[in-house]
Amino acid sequence: MYRTLEYLPGISDSDVARLRSAGIRHTNQLLHRTTLDTDRKRLSKKTGISTSRLLEFAHQCTLLEVSGTLYRPEAVIQIGPTDAARFGGEGVLAHGGLLARF
Image (cartoon, rainbow, N blue to C red; front, side, top):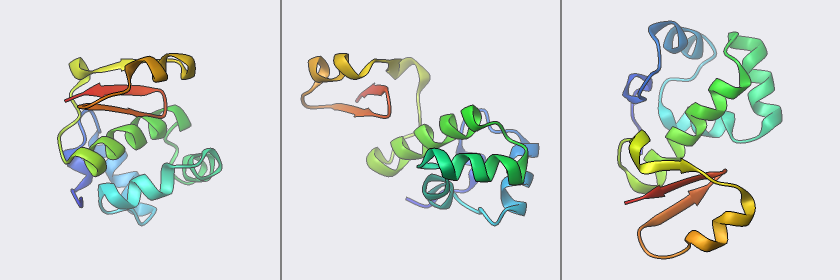
């Protein structure tokens, strides 16, 4: 799903400008440029946005890509890898340490 960067909750105008200067125009491009740790480090050096913030954006983009819904913080809890198996089932998306119930 292609959405403009401004669609991400909490993204600042400054973040948008820095990402656009790196050639990233929409959430799909951001997702593909922040999936791997090495990619986040490279993009962080280019934009000045911390790798942890880029990872947060990657999680939000993943939820948009998979579900087509807007990231809702109240619907997401942090889980560890051993907990993920307990939450399997319908209406559940577990990805990258995040669990979202729809």
